[in-house]
Length: 281
Length: 353
Image (cartoon, rainbow over all chains, first blue to last red):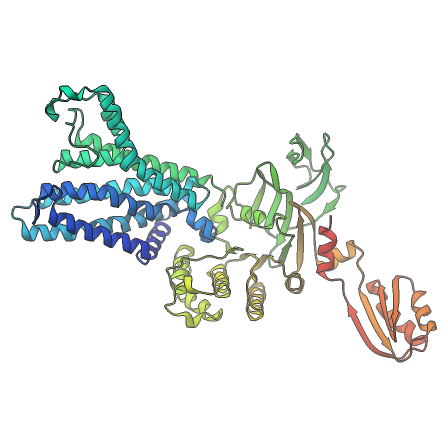
């Protein structure tokens, strides 16, 4: 692998995307909403919140918005260039398909991480100025985990852009996946769970005995994994889809959930390279 | 290399093949999918082309999309330092062939070498030798012309100063900070040419380089191609502008329905098709004696008279004798025009079926 080729492609992706008005718009919206959440808090109280409450709100906001930013950055990464015609020119140079995927992943990943850093960084700075005893390391860990979460969605989006034959289909696939992970899957899982549990006998959430299959299936949703990971590693998170109300099983650990997110990245990255190498341009 | 046409034993479809004498070739009939092996014979084979300095060597290239062959056993050579024109109607397989030459698509069969480097096995090494201008030229719309070219220069290991120089040479020097997304089609096309010749590659592959250009742009690109050839660059160019191809190309290949139907110089192809130059001679007073004198000459195919003008279709070698016959018959020549067989005629004949 030629490092200079990868670096050049990554640099180009950064230059190209920081001028993309849609990316700028969504990233700005993300930064503003983060500030709003950090001020008003996530649980209905107002004023500058403590770190735990703010992170809880930010996690839910992040799972919605960061996945959108990641999909917007990645869904056309490969197929967009193929459709436009610039991919054939790029591949006619001495750049390999593997180098192109790596370069694009790094460049788009840098844009995404920068967006998260700016959005959460400004909010963190304001919290630090207004709230005493802020655990900066925990907040940095939260930003880091959010970046990893964003990279999962970016990798999935890049993979879609190598699988689908049209940019519009890749966009459709990304939108469907966003709904699947954010809305459909949590509702379906909670629905299935309700059919197996007699809720009339339950008075406190902590007394619920949830079957293991529910937690296993949740590992296939990066959003659930992300919010659970934040709960375990940083602060308790309650999401609108009900995640957080149910106590986590003992076998859930920070390492396991972190590993799951990393596996998502590795699997979809490998699939992207494999598919792109077989694709006719 | 020996090129030959073989017949499928099952469905009798003719399949063009190419290879070295004695070479065993695996064949799949594009019509009935029958598989077979064929050994290229020695000197007695059909057409032979001695090629010692092939810049691009395509052998038995086959690519099928959804069971429809886009290119079918296409074989040709492009010699070092020549301009090779690649012609064919829309959908004939030109772009598919070019994409295979650049390892952009995966052929079903066949080999392609660039300066003896196998494109499929050592794609990166082969592509280092090539500058490519695709039919659909595209850049990164949010970047300027210079930023775009500098990006390609980094990957090509070309000096960045060359980017500014090329932008100026191709008439884009005044674009400054204007993003490529705001460029006209002609400007993008010229920038595409700059990208192709960036780093002075020894081989240029140009797919419709003049498409969408105004006449001034066409001349600019044509001059650039000639300039590159004069520097020793091998140029493979596909174009619909046949007059331009005829003007600049040393040899041409014609592809029709995925099959390479001809490759030679325009003159050579005209001879193969028995195409003859047309002379138009105006005399002060046309008489039947003059007309008869011309008609009697061997090699004269057709004589038509219009007023004092004779339109004559004859062998190229007979032109001087025609003039002599007219003057001997008492004709006083006022005007003489000769129209050589055009590439358009050659193209139409080879692609009419």
